[in-house]
Length: 136
Image (cartoon, rainbow, N blue to C red):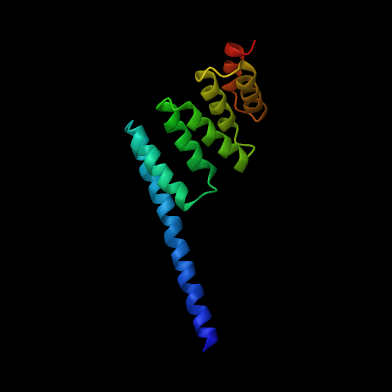
């Protein structure tokens, strides 16, 4: 009898986790659609809902950071790009975008250049132009 109860609980938990993950993906796709429509406030809201379902996805934080960058919410964008980097330290474009957010916020040039340099070191070649424009 106890084995049946435990098995039932495991099945329900598994089903619940599947639904939970599906909602993160669904919110993420809806956020991408809102971003494509330039509805950046809506995109941020939808990405935030996706994050509530999946706290460790660097892609969701990255996309929300991009929407925040479009809204010129530079401090919030920097936080999201930093979160991406903490989850995946080899996510080159997150360094670049954090550097651009810092540049647009008028942060010290050294901080921006460190991010651009790291992005270049990780193979994001577009960071080279930013290095030339802002760090030489």
